[in-house]
Amino acid sequence: MSRYDFQHQLGSSHSPVTRRISLMQAIHLDAPLMGGLLVLVCVGLFVLYSASGQSMDTLMRQLVRITAGFAAMMVMAFISPRTYKRWTPWLFGIGLILLVGVLVTGTQAKGAQRWLA
Image 1 (cartoon, rainbow, N blue to C red):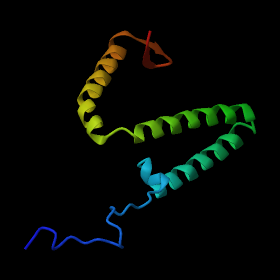
Image 2 (cartoon, rainbow, N blue to C red):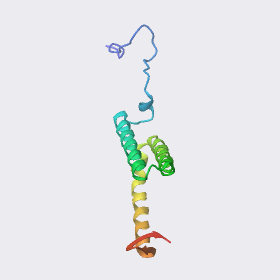
Image 3 (tube, helix red, strand yellow):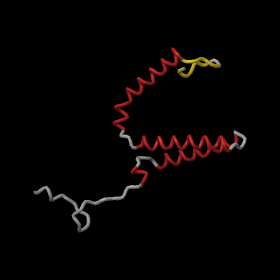
Image 4 (cartoon, rainbow, N blue to C red):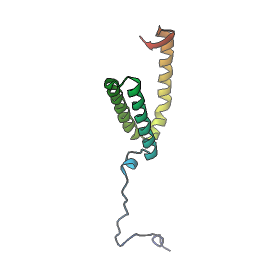
């Protein structure tokens, strides 16, 4: 028996079968998750608009922040999970150092100690 006995070929061509991938698969994002995120963002913008007394300035500032967050999410979607796993201990350590820094040198205002001055 040769190794080619069990090789299955589709069609008459000998080229490998390629299939199209969607945009969501190409950028590694889950469509239902993105749909839920979009619904939450829209509800949040609606609540902000009604709570701020129909202020368009507040709404536009929040929309700019949402856009920046979405852009950061898109960039992070392209990073390999192995990279996140490799950097996690270092980022955790940096976060702990910053928390200790706030505890030691942070400014106190209105009953809370926060911000590195």
